[in-house]
Image 1 (cartoon, rainbow, N blue to C red):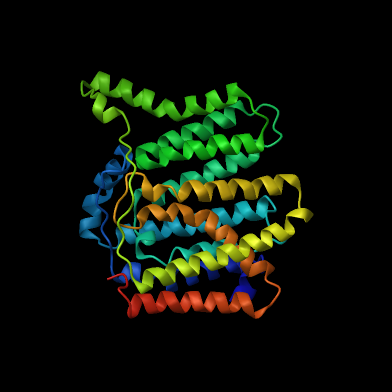
Image 2 (tube, one colour):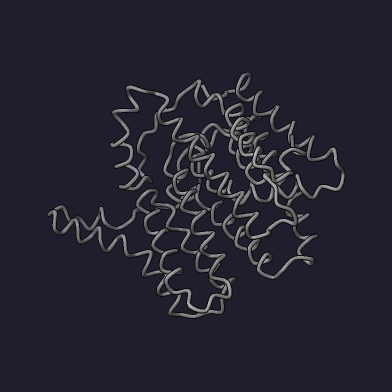
Length: 330
């Protein structure tokens, strides 16, 4: 299977879709209906209100929307890695890795605010990469900030990614205070227009306008299945990180900076469960974008040929076992 995805063939797009349906079949067999959480933003609540009546009469609606998001994100991530030459060969391994790694937890396949934010993070990631060596990047930087501001109205905790964006700008461009201020202006623009709307509508409330962000330690139920999922996420990540480090000396400087952006995104994503913490795993799905990129390097660069095949089938076998013999998705 990994050998097929190493080829950049148009047929692999169909193969990726089929693989996604097979390993994510339980999300259709056991449909999950999303509910609004305290950390979800106003925009996500509006989306749930819009699709809610249809979701009640057709219980597969939200699983279909979630699968569509996951598949599109896999394709976009794959295209980003290939177009920016982040790996020494164009493949479908990043997309395969994303579909595979997001199957390790049922919550990563729910229609949720963090899953929607992943799409915006891909837009921001591409924008940050494109401002490298750009003479006049003010418009692009404003759009990056604006995208994050909109993400804040989908998932309040995602505003913590402003730290990632500022650090990424420091990596990609020489420090210019005016560019940082333009980025922050973009972040605050949606709040400005929402404030105007609430004043005109007569529903102004300072307590509701200010994002409610708290810090805490998530309380998660420990199990052998959870340990297995963490193991299968971390081992390919660490292996991929080793191979990336080995190949950095032979790549262009913009590619090195690109991997720095992904690593910073991963570190910022790992903070998400501690912001407006909950007892579920939905928030961790935002870390799977950079994780999938590192996993893809394990499948591509491994010098011992059986290793990526073994990792793939162990992961696929664990997913199937989790679905049918473990706590599963039911």
